[in-house]
Amino acid sequence: MFENAVYITRLIFTFQQRKADEFLAYFGRMIEDGYRHKGLRKKLVEELQAKGITDTRVLDAINRVPRHAFLTSAFLQFAYENQAFPIGAGQTISAPYTVAFQSQLLQVEKGMKVLEIGTGSGYQTSVLCEMGAKVYSIERQKLLFTNAKKMLSEMGYNCHLAYGDGYKGIPAFAPYDRIIITCAIPTFPEDLLLQMKPGGRLVMPFGEGDQQEMTVISEDENGEFKTEYFGKFSFVPMLESRSNTKL
Ligand code: SAH
Image (cartoon, rainbow, N blue to C red):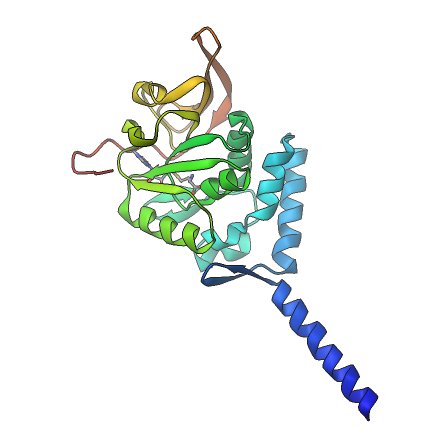
């Protein structure tokens, strides 16, 4: 009888422990992150490796961030497929491969200041935070800014989010070691390059139309800018600046 009670208590404890493991206790909010999600994430990381992503800091970060938390419930089951999805306001969360590719090109190191243009869902922001960057991200659409701010703070990511026009960057916190643009920019980002540290790197999908060229602008020790191209991608267009935006 007594042995039975001990056995049952142990069973209940194990069950509760297991249940607890399936939740990440993020600040104030419980986001379910069970074995299934973790398994799907591991498979996604393997898929990204097979597609040529080699930076282990990027792969580790993607392995840690619960992408399903950034999608509306209608798309939950596809969270770990390599696809872009609508996030509202006519925008999309980039496909994981695109996020991984841009993050790898950025060559982020721990403690670096990174400026992101186009916060969107906040997924790319959280990947950069997981890589140890101090992230400053700007979003032009109020709804997305508000949602991302809430989500990222509930998840415990310590980043600075701004609502405003990404063409102008965030001069108040400049200069940045790295700059990443996550929407298609049709013009040369002069104002943003002025906010970049010497020796910095800027990664952007450059151009108009359905496809853009993934472009890296880097500055060497002598202050010479170098431009390199890394293939075609398809991003939502960067929106025109608006006179009533504020930082
Ligand atoms: N990094 C995002 C990708 C979002 S898509 C993610 O991981 O989910 C690109 C985002 O850029 C959209 O949210 C869009 O509203 C935003 N954007 C477009 N034009 C902008 C501008 N001029 N300034 C700031 N953000 C802009």
